[in-house]
Image (cartoon, rainbow, N blue to C red; front, top):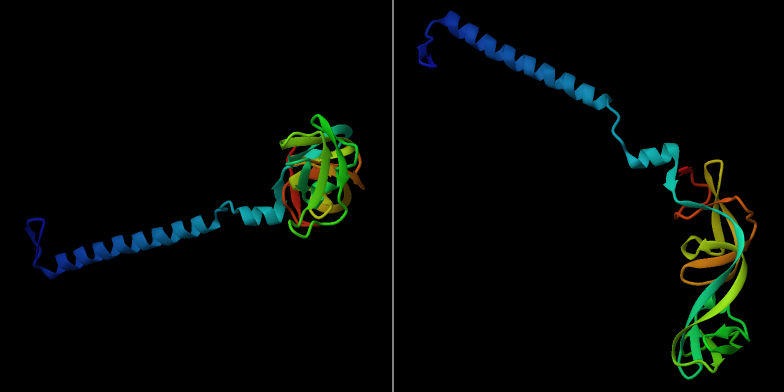
Length: 199
Protein backbone atom coordinates (compact mmCIF):
# COMPACT_ATOMS: atom_id res chain seq x y z
CA UNK A 1 0.00 0.00 0.00
CA UNK A 2 1.32 3.44 -0.94
CA UNK A 3 0.31 6.55 1.09
CA UNK A 4 1.89 9.98 0.60
CA UNK A 5 4.54 8.50 -1.61
CA UNK A 6 5.67 5.90 0.97
CA UNK A 7 5.13 2.19 0.86
CA UNK A 8 3.46 0.61 3.87
CA UNK A 9 3.55 -3.06 3.09
CA UNK A 10 4.28 -4.65 6.42
CA UNK A 11 1.44 -5.64 8.76
CA UNK A 12 2.74 -3.75 11.76
CA UNK A 13 2.73 -0.40 9.92
CA UNK A 14 -0.76 -1.04 8.53
CA UNK A 15 -2.04 -1.92 12.01
CA UNK A 16 -0.56 1.31 13.46
CA UNK A 17 -2.08 3.34 10.62
CA UNK A 18 -5.54 1.77 11.04
CA UNK A 19 -5.39 2.22 14.81
CA UNK A 20 -4.46 5.89 14.42
CA UNK A 21 -7.37 6.47 11.99
CA UNK A 22 -9.80 4.68 14.32
CA UNK A 23 -8.45 6.68 17.27
CA UNK A 24 -8.97 9.97 15.45
CA UNK A 25 -12.54 8.93 14.52
CA UNK A 26 -13.27 7.85 18.12
CA UNK A 27 -11.98 11.17 19.49
CA UNK A 28 -14.08 13.07 16.96
CA UNK A 29 -17.26 11.09 17.91
CA UNK A 30 -16.63 11.66 21.63
CA UNK A 31 -16.02 15.37 21.00
CA UNK A 32 -19.30 15.68 19.02
CA UNK A 33 -21.34 13.89 21.71
CA UNK A 34 -19.84 16.10 24.42
CA UNK A 35 -20.57 19.26 22.39
CA UNK A 36 -24.18 18.18 21.69
CA UNK A 37 -24.69 17.52 25.41
CA UNK A 38 -23.29 20.97 26.29
CA UNK A 39 -25.48 22.69 23.68
CA UNK A 40 -28.57 20.78 24.90
CA UNK A 41 -28.09 22.23 28.39
CA UNK A 42 -27.99 25.81 27.06
CA UNK A 43 -31.16 27.83 27.53
CA UNK A 44 -32.40 29.13 24.21
CA UNK A 45 -34.85 32.03 24.31
CA UNK A 46 -38.31 30.80 23.45
CA UNK A 47 -40.94 33.58 23.36
CA UNK A 48 -43.84 31.20 24.00
CA UNK A 49 -42.15 29.66 27.05
CA UNK A 50 -41.16 33.14 28.28
CA UNK A 51 -44.75 34.40 27.95
CA UNK A 52 -45.98 31.39 29.92
CA UNK A 53 -43.48 31.93 32.72
CA UNK A 54 -43.26 35.74 32.92
CA UNK A 55 -46.47 36.80 31.19
CA UNK A 56 -46.96 38.35 27.77
CA UNK A 57 -45.46 41.84 27.40
CA UNK A 58 -48.28 44.36 26.94
CA UNK A 59 -48.76 48.02 26.09
CA UNK A 60 -50.58 50.00 28.77
CA UNK A 61 -51.83 53.45 29.70
CA UNK A 62 -52.71 54.97 33.04
CA UNK A 63 -56.42 55.78 33.33
CA UNK A 64 -57.22 59.44 33.91
CA UNK A 65 -60.70 60.92 33.99
CA UNK A 66 -60.97 64.14 32.01
CA UNK A 67 -63.13 66.16 29.66
CA UNK A 68 -62.49 66.09 25.96
CA UNK A 69 -63.98 66.27 22.49
CA UNK A 70 -65.03 63.26 20.46
CA UNK A 71 -65.28 63.91 16.73
CA UNK A 72 -67.65 61.62 14.88
CA UNK A 73 -67.23 61.74 11.08
CA UNK A 74 -70.43 62.10 9.06
CA UNK A 75 -70.59 61.72 5.30
CA UNK A 76 -73.46 64.06 4.56
CA UNK A 77 -75.47 64.22 1.38
CA UNK A 78 -78.62 66.38 1.20
CA UNK A 79 -78.56 66.87 5.01
CA UNK A 80 -78.66 63.11 5.58
CA UNK A 81 -75.97 60.71 6.84
CA UNK A 82 -75.76 57.02 7.75
CA UNK A 83 -73.80 55.86 10.79
CA UNK A 84 -73.03 52.60 12.61
CA UNK A 85 -74.49 51.78 16.00
CA UNK A 86 -71.17 52.59 17.70
CA UNK A 87 -71.17 56.12 16.27
CA UNK A 88 -74.92 56.66 16.81
CA UNK A 89 -74.42 56.46 20.60
CA UNK A 90 -72.51 59.74 20.64
CA UNK A 91 -74.93 61.71 18.43
CA UNK A 92 -77.75 63.82 19.85
CA UNK A 93 -80.35 66.19 18.47
CA UNK A 94 -79.06 69.78 18.60
CA UNK A 95 -75.41 68.71 18.36
CA UNK A 96 -73.21 71.03 16.28
CA UNK A 97 -71.98 69.74 12.90
CA UNK A 98 -69.79 72.14 10.91
CA UNK A 99 -72.02 75.23 10.38
CA UNK A 100 -75.28 73.38 11.14
CA UNK A 101 -76.73 70.92 13.60
CA UNK A 102 -78.27 67.46 13.97
CA UNK A 103 -82.07 67.50 13.89
CA UNK A 104 -82.84 63.74 13.99
CA UNK A 105 -81.07 60.53 15.08
CA UNK A 106 -82.86 57.27 14.25
CA UNK A 107 -83.43 54.72 17.00
CA UNK A 108 -83.82 51.82 14.57
CA UNK A 109 -81.79 50.53 11.64
CA UNK A 110 -82.54 51.56 8.09
CA UNK A 111 -83.40 48.24 6.44
CA UNK A 112 -81.91 49.26 3.09
CA UNK A 113 -78.47 50.17 4.42
CA UNK A 114 -78.23 48.38 7.78
CA UNK A 115 -77.16 51.67 9.38
CA UNK A 116 -78.79 54.45 11.40
CA UNK A 117 -80.11 57.60 9.69
CA UNK A 118 -78.94 60.99 10.96
CA UNK A 119 -80.59 64.13 9.57
CA UNK A 120 -78.94 67.52 9.74
CA UNK A 121 -79.85 71.14 8.99
CA UNK A 122 -77.68 73.71 7.17
CA UNK A 123 -74.74 71.33 6.62
CA UNK A 124 -72.91 71.22 3.28
CA UNK A 125 -72.49 67.95 1.40
CA UNK A 126 -69.25 66.07 2.15
CA UNK A 127 -67.52 64.86 5.28
CA UNK A 128 -68.15 66.87 8.43
CA UNK A 129 -67.52 66.13 12.07
CA UNK A 130 -70.10 66.08 14.84
CA UNK A 131 -68.28 67.26 17.93
CA UNK A 132 -69.45 66.19 21.35
CA UNK A 133 -67.92 66.98 24.69
CA UNK A 134 -67.51 64.02 26.98
CA UNK A 135 -66.34 63.58 30.55
CA UNK A 136 -64.82 60.18 31.25
CA UNK A 137 -61.83 57.99 30.58
CA UNK A 138 -60.41 58.35 27.06
CA UNK A 139 -59.24 54.88 25.99
CA UNK A 140 -58.01 54.03 22.48
CA UNK A 141 -61.00 52.62 20.62
CA UNK A 142 -59.19 49.42 19.64
CA UNK A 143 -58.68 48.58 23.36
CA UNK A 144 -62.43 48.60 24.09
CA UNK A 145 -63.81 45.18 23.18
CA UNK A 146 -67.42 44.13 23.74
CA UNK A 147 -67.95 46.98 26.24
CA UNK A 148 -64.95 45.83 28.28
CA UNK A 149 -61.41 47.02 28.89
CA UNK A 150 -58.59 45.00 30.42
CA UNK A 151 -57.06 46.26 33.66
CA UNK A 152 -53.68 45.03 34.95
CA UNK A 153 -53.98 43.63 38.48
CA UNK A 154 -51.07 41.74 40.10
CA UNK A 155 -49.64 40.59 36.77
CA UNK A 156 -52.98 39.40 35.39
CA UNK A 157 -55.38 40.98 32.87
CA UNK A 158 -58.83 41.46 34.41
CA UNK A 159 -61.89 42.27 32.27
CA UNK A 160 -63.70 45.39 33.48
CA UNK A 161 -67.16 46.30 32.12
CA UNK A 162 -67.50 49.86 30.84
CA UNK A 163 -70.14 52.02 29.23
CA UNK A 164 -69.07 53.64 25.97
CA UNK A 165 -70.47 57.18 26.13
CA UNK A 166 -69.03 58.29 22.78
CA UNK A 167 -66.34 57.13 20.39
CA UNK A 168 -64.52 58.06 17.23
CA UNK A 169 -61.88 56.25 15.21
CA UNK A 170 -59.16 57.13 17.73
CA UNK A 171 -60.65 57.22 21.23
CA UNK A 172 -63.68 56.03 23.16
CA UNK A 173 -64.96 58.03 26.12
CA UNK A 174 -65.94 55.40 28.70
CA UNK A 175 -67.21 55.24 32.26
CA UNK A 176 -67.62 52.32 34.59
CA UNK A 177 -65.63 50.36 37.13
CA UNK A 178 -62.30 52.06 36.44
CA UNK A 179 -60.70 54.84 38.43
CA UNK A 180 -57.83 57.29 38.09
CA UNK A 181 -54.48 55.52 38.21
CA UNK A 182 -55.70 52.12 36.96
CA UNK A 183 -53.34 50.47 34.47
CA UNK A 184 -55.36 49.78 31.30
CA UNK A 185 -54.01 47.08 28.96
CA UNK A 186 -54.03 48.12 25.31
CA UNK A 187 -52.70 44.86 23.85
CA UNK A 188 -55.15 42.14 22.92
CA UNK A 189 -55.20 39.64 25.79
CA UNK A 190 -57.69 37.21 27.28
CA UNK A 191 -59.26 37.68 30.72
CA UNK A 192 -57.08 36.23 33.52
CA UNK A 193 -54.08 35.91 31.18
CA UNK A 194 -50.68 36.41 32.82
CA UNK A 195 -49.16 39.70 31.62
CA UNK A 196 -45.87 41.55 31.98
CA UNK A 197 -46.33 45.31 32.36
CA UNK A 198 -43.16 47.14 31.31
CA UNK A 199 -42.27 50.12 33.51
